[in-house]
Length: 496
Image 1 (cartoon, rainbow, N blue to C red):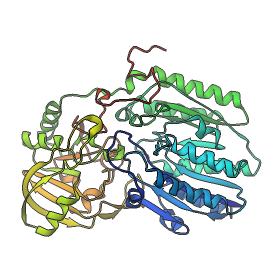
Image 2 (cartoon, rainbow, N blue to C red; image 1 turned 90 degrees about the horizontal axis):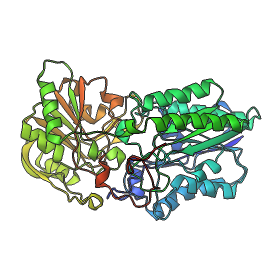
Image 3 (cartoon, one colour; image 1 turned 30 degrees about the horizontal axis):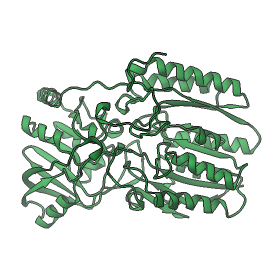
Image 4 (cartoon, rainbow, N blue to C red; image 1 turned 30 degrees about the vertical axis):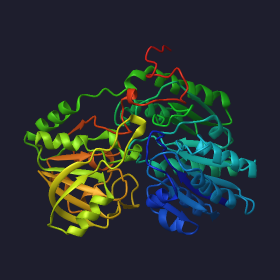
C-alpha cells in the first residue's frame, strides 16, 4: 500500500494587511520529505494520526510537505503554487492507493478564493480515482468543490482545537476501511446563510457545544463522520458561513437527512451566534473590579479584535492603553508584535530603562485605521530566543517560536513583545520568559477562544475587551463585497 500524506493549512483573513508569503509558513511550519514524520510524530495533530495509521497498515509513506502559517492576508499566488506544487508533483511520481490530507478549509489565495478546493480538484485531474481523506478546521468555509473532489472529510469538533489527532484518526481509518472494501463513503453537505461570529463558536458554550453534541449523536446512530463547520467570517468569499457535512456508508439518503437535521438546528440558533459587546472602558472597569476581589486566580482580559490567530496584526494598543489609564496592576500581557522594539530592548540589555513607541506599526486600511504606537518608558525584564515546546492540550508537542522576544515592565504591566506572530493559547508564551501566569492578578491576551486550551483552568473570570483590529466582531467596520447575500446577521431581518 502506498499513501500520500500532506498538510497545507492557512486561515485567511481577507481584511488583514499582513502578507502571506513563503516566509510566513516558514515562521510556523514548513517541512518536507522525511522531516515531516520526524517533526509531527507524537504530537496532537491530524498528521501524527495519519503517520501512525500508515505505519500500522505497513504502508509506504510519501510525505512531500507539511506547511502551516499563522492566519493573515490572502496567500500570495507564487506561494500557493509552490505549496500545491509539492503535493501535485509527489502525486505524479507513481500510483498511490490513497491520500490523507490535513487542510484548513478557509484558505484564500490570490486568484483562488477556494484554496483547498483548488488543490483537491487538481489532484483529481492527476489521479481521478484516488481515494482522498481530508481533515478540516472547525472554521472551514465549505465549498462544493472541496466535497466533490475528496472521498471523505471531517472537521474538528472542539474549539479550542484539542481533538486534532482524534479526527485525523477517525477519517484516516475510514479511508483504510474504504481501501479494504469494508465501507463505501457517500457525503451530503449544505450551507445556511449564517455568518457566525468566532467569539460565539467556543464548544464549551452554547450554541456550538450542543451542535457538536448533535454531530456525535449522528455518528452514534450510524454516520461514519458528521461535522458542523462554524465557518470563518473574516474571509470575504461567496461560500463563507456555517455549513455541515455528513459521511455515511453507501446511504446517501441517510447522509442527507442527517445533514438537514444539523443545519436546521444551527439556523434555529442564528441569533445566539452574534456577539454582543460593551464599550472598552466599561469592560476594563469590570475586569479591574473583579481583580480587586480576594482570589488566587487571575482575571483574563481578551483583546479579541487583535487576535493574530484570526489574522490580527497583534500590535494594536487600545486595550493596553485603557488598562494603563485605569491603573490595573500585576498584569501580564501576551503578546505585542514589534520586532523593532525587541531589537531596542536587546541592545539596551536586561535591567535597562528604555523609552520606546510600542506597537502600532501596522496600518489597517480595510477598517480605515492607521497604526497608533504607544510611547512607554519601562525596564527590560527578560530577553529570550522565543522558543518552547507546547505542553498544553492544543498542538501538544509542537515547538513554538515567537522569534527574538523581550519583556517590558511598565506601570504594573509585564508586556511580552515578540518578533513573530503567535496567538497565546499555551502557558509557554509566559513561562518561557520567566512569568508565572497563575500568580498574576490579570492576564491580558490577544486571543479569542484558543486561549482556553492553556489558560481557562487558571482563570477565575474572563472579560472580552472590544479594542481595535481586523479581527473585530463589529460587522459594521467590515466592507463585505463578495459574500453571498442575503446573509444573517448582515441582513438581520432574514426569516427561515
